[in-house]
Length: 68
Image 1 (spheres, rainbow, N blue to C red):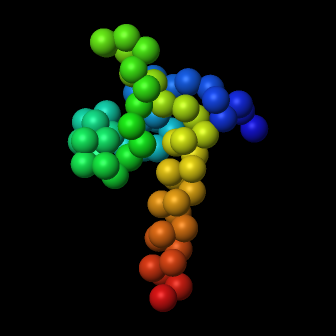
Image 2 (image 1 turned 45 degrees about the vertical axis):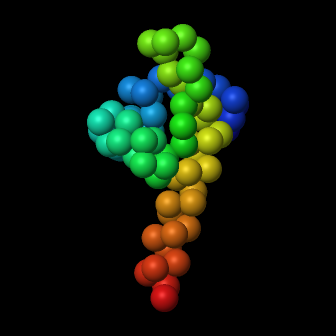
């Protein structure tokens, strides 16, 4: 598996999650998606491990609703 500390730009997060960049930004603002780290005023990155953890939680939540 890849290094969980690997830094991802928004286009990589979008590809990994299948979410549009606008959805990622909206969900970050709404607290539904992990906040990025700002490397500069224009560069924001996410840690791969945080994104994978979020995907796993979403999968578990969906699986829980299906089994119930």
